[in-house]
Length: 483
Image (cartoon, rainbow, N blue to C red; front, side, top):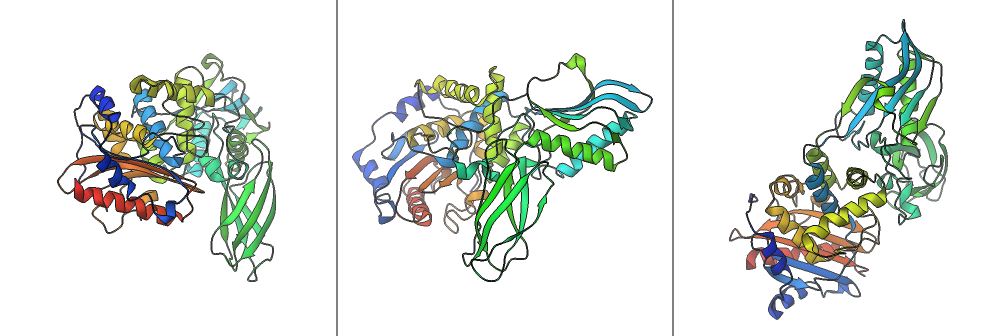
């Protein structure tokens, strides 16, 4: 069923309805689904709300603030759409410092980052190789066939080490925990290819790393296993080129890929541009370098080309559909940059100010990162549904946030959720998953055509994630028929 759009409601009324006590019967209706053996010992919050009127229909501990995992991305992307606008584009500039004499640049080539999380991304366009070809072509178009100086990547657009202080050791060196940089490139990711032996417990061999990562020192402690899943994790401190891979991979694999986070994305960018120039016949005498101190003043450099990201609306759609942590983290940093503090702390302050403005609460949630990887993030199901109700009556969010949530049974991380039920292709939602954390939030249409919003989170449950998912599916399928 299609999802109706462009509601016109008073948000002040929504807030009042959001805090109104619901009936005991409504509380029992939700409670029935969340007292199963799978959720024994867990803390649960759940709210079901009319998307048009804001009336709270069913609740179960609606004001418990729990870790929402990647459902947190709804908050960050919604704020980014409202504060930056759906047409906002990140900007990266290729420039030079010095002067061109004949065909020789007596000076440095500069890549000046603007925080673009889609730069050289395989999710948008043809990836990093196409980007390097464009940059090389721009250098040649300026008549340059030799450079006396260095290739320098400037990442001063954002400040700090790009890693939230609550990120755990197991996450930060793996692709899904990649640090934010003022010059992100290639999804801040590299790939390690392994061969595993046919006997369990035997050492796996590293075949190659792609693309080449400058100064990377990678060692392996990976073994073959009868477990048919990737249980290998990369460990390393932020900014350090030393990385160690530990764990197990399925036995008998000629090629098995593990993804890591780039230790230094701007250095990677400078290295590969210099390499691409040399391969194309442009001689570069100086080294490759990264700098983070200050963005060059425009008057001190000459632009060769400018790369613009896809519009923010496209980045948000990808972020919500694929639950892309890096892109959501970058949006948080950009919120900080817009407010004049281009740090993680600046982004968190901007996010808090954005939501405090319409909830009337000084601390509507606890926020520690932009992606939901932090277990210290906490928000209630009531608050999540209030954000969804608000989104339904604002064009910029209805069209670019709600419509960007993946369809249950069809897309992204929820392609198996509610498969072959009345919610398949009818429910738009964001999922969130970590060890002992499961969360969902979204909107759907009942059999009568009524539009509903819901939010659910469970922390520290004893059952399997699949059992928790089934409990939520049953709750929502019942709501489809009850309303």
